Length: 633
Image (cartoon, rainbow, N blue to C red):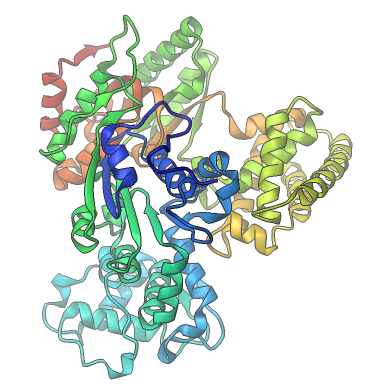
């Protein structure tokens, strides 16, 4: 049953701010919002509005594009939970997954000179390989080549912005250094190859070429997806923006771009300098700015605004919707002579706060600009001395970082199965999560009969796994080889049950062919580590996630997350030595870190790490905000 647009109300929240209501009902829109403004929530509400009112009519779909798999999955889950009857018409995926799906499904539409005789392999060129290539062609390139093309920006900024010609053999000779480098790269790496090595920039370019040269495919995509959402739009790369413009600009598609100009910290990866301004011009988008903050108290919001104005003098001041805690100083700078003393003070403070106020370890975060592994030993020891644990979310686990591993949907499923098999009953939420995930793999729109069979199969497998657990006791003192053998056997059993080679698994759990294997390899490494410190199977799932540990992570990895209390470690020269080289990018990074805190933010500085960081203007903002600087010797 359709709801009249005038009668539609948001679900799960009391109301929307005025600008959000206007953007919700608008056509193509550019929606900028600061930290904690609820950007993902806005997209979920806009999806509900379009689907429930019938503005997006069956069988039309909404396509939501995110930059990371976990963000895409998060938005998908929000919409499915609110609109199960419309879930099949909301598709949330990453840019890479979308462009790859175009290439894989419509390869036959590639112009003749770009076709693959066999297939392609996903691969990446290292900076060293790009430097060798540029060196090889330098002698034959047009004048000015050395100063115009660099290895660090060649792939994202030069190749990513270049459109593939439909008939490269008919292209006139290059007249600029950039054109020459691009043409040579294509000729050496792709044209005439039976099964070329293709990265995601090239997949993006191939997908754009297919759509540009096939009006029928373009019309089909526009008919299927008349509404498109793009999250974290400030991080849009040259290749991604070119693709969006070719497919959807000026063609009747309603596009909603959401993000925060001041959180553009992916410039090194080819993000446009001001994607929103370009989008508003090219797509005739109506601009909106959300000003409510649902994460941080007003005092923290006021401090964030000082830094935001450094980046954009016109940025609007947010209004907090968070009630401040009584009797607490929300922002301080602590200064120490040594890293050991710093770690001890942080650990003692967190332990006291947990004991007195009952907070959970997950409500705290220790973040730093870089080199968090250097900070880990002192912090681990100090937290251990007060009965707490540290979890380095930036640690490498195979080819993944720990935080990415812990957020992965396949890992949630694997750990959930282990938890269910190790503990009988009392896990209703885990059962629900596991069966929902299995249902998505089996069928996006499973009926009751499919669901019953799925649950019966799961019950049978869990009984088998319990018997194996009973026959395979754990010993925290076991040798690494034994832990790895047990881990391999466990992973093989679960992977076989899940049939991870199926099309459904590949659709749900990875953008690339190797994603599932990369995740499994990282999962095995983590499980093997866990088995060497637990004595029973019912402790494995909790030890895997270490949810009762204090997280340590970089600012980049903390983006999109929030914590009650944030310790921003390292206002030091050792952490911020490059600030003066690119003050804009560095200030954006600083802004992202500051905006992770909901109610309390503590900066730390340590003489042992080279003295205060070289960003006097940011110190001025702290001083002008009345932030106390406390010396702790």
